[in-house]
Amino acid sequence: MAAKKADFEEWGRRFGISPIAARLIRNREIKTPEEAEKYLTGSFLDLYPPEMMLDMEDAAAVLEEQIRLGSRIRVIGDYDVDGITAAHILTKGLKELGALADTVIPHRIRDGYGLNEQLIEDAAAQGIKTILTCDNGIAAAEQTAMAQRLGMTVVVTDHHEVPFREDGGIREEILPPAAAVVDPKRKDCPYPYKNICGAVVAYKLVELLLRRFGVEPTHKQKLLDEFLQLAALATVCDVCELQDENRILVKEGLKRLRSAPCLGIQALMRVCGIEKEKLNTYHLGFVLGPCLNATGRLDTAQRALELLETEDEGSAVRAAQVLKEMNESRKAMTQAGVEEAVACVETAGLAKDKVLVIFLPECHESLAGIIAGRIREKYGKPAFVLTRGEEGVKGSGRSIEAYHMYEAMNACRELFTKFGGHKMAAGLSMKEEDIPRLRETLNRQCALTEEDFIPRIHIDMALPLAYANRQLAEEIALLEPFGTGNPHPLFACKDLRFLKGFKMGSQGSFARYRVEQGGQEYTLVYFGSLDKFHTFLEEKFGQGAVEKLYAGRGELLISVTYELGLHTYMGKTDVQLMMWNFC
Image (tube, rainbow, N blue to C red; front, side):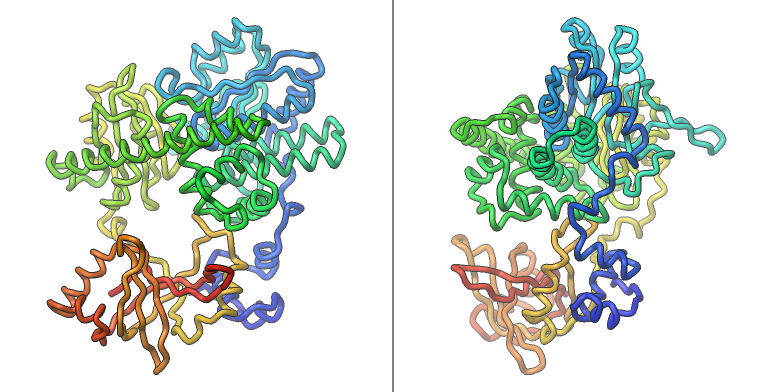
């Protein structure tokens, strides 16, 4: 349970909120009243200036010169939401300034991640003078050097961990020999907040370029409003922490998406049945994002890029429908892959490993990361899923909080032909014959303890249901947007008396419950696994407990964790109590 200290009464008076809401803000690592004010009221004007990022002004100077010379510039992005949106932001921004710019999104299977020799040779053959990377490039030292030998200038913009070599406990960063290397994770970069995504780095570069070219203020703001929407989408989809600048970016981006979404995203919202006024981070991360990602997984991310580029409403809707259908296919393929991975863990003796290394030869390589994430969730362990690619083995990893995946991989870098990533996720290429050695090495070097694998539920505070009222629900709404690094407040309540249950949904897969505490009755809704809850009831209260509860003869004392929020239905807004866990 969080127990941060501050003068909650004073914070409450200063910001016009209750001491409970003040405690919730402090629990989110907000330490001072000044930080709390920025958390509550931070706006577009509080975003950090681009110039604070190392090499940003050098990057802008190179591009400005190339634009004025009429030289051809090629933006090379990536095939996920972050890479696609970053590429679109840069390309459209450059073209608005008169640049001869185009975009190449690497093909996931044919090209792999980031810069490669073929992409560089193609650019040279087509008369490209400058390569501008986004969401990749920080690990492309050899490819950058090759581009320079062929007479091209390279500008790198990225946000991934900087490769390093370690000698005697001293780390030396390995930077690509580019004209400018913009990455907030460089150790000497003074940018105040390091955890921004690639699309945000791209946004900052375009913001600086628009200023250098003296673009008319109204037009400049219109462009930045559009690009901010995409940067917000990418921030959520790349699972960046919604803290500091990221929280402001997503908050401001959502405002713009709800009022005037750019055409491509508006079309995608339409085919997915999302009302723009109700758009939130869930829709960004779990509805819109997967549709954009599906193109890069099953076909080519160029389709998603074209959706963002289109200026025709009919074309946008048709393109969005294709993306939605592709994502439905991706879901079915993913489920099959997860089932195969679980079978592999259970039958191949992997369950005892601290780090799971799973080889699924026939799995579509684009699904490895999603499957790794599901396996991580199921077993609570770092997981790598590997599959056969066109050249050797490719794979993706997803980690747990206590395990720095990129550093673990760097410690056995000789096993990879290519790798990159950060603490929580990574991608790799390697030889198939080295898979057993990788599994052995990662587990031998792993320092995780049994305690690291215990799932942790972070509770904000114990809160009787009598305090979970409309005023507090409205104050909690001030803490939005919620997501990684800024979770929805979670409360605990002991010994609620469950009186009666009611099934909900067309399949009866959800439920609401009448509960009593202190002589007052309340309604709890539950959208989790009813099978899991029913099993708990039978084990704790005996055979027939489930039947009794739904018959209104429950009288079961259960402790729960819950969320408090506001729910609007048919124009009426009510307080909603949502159960998450129980014991």
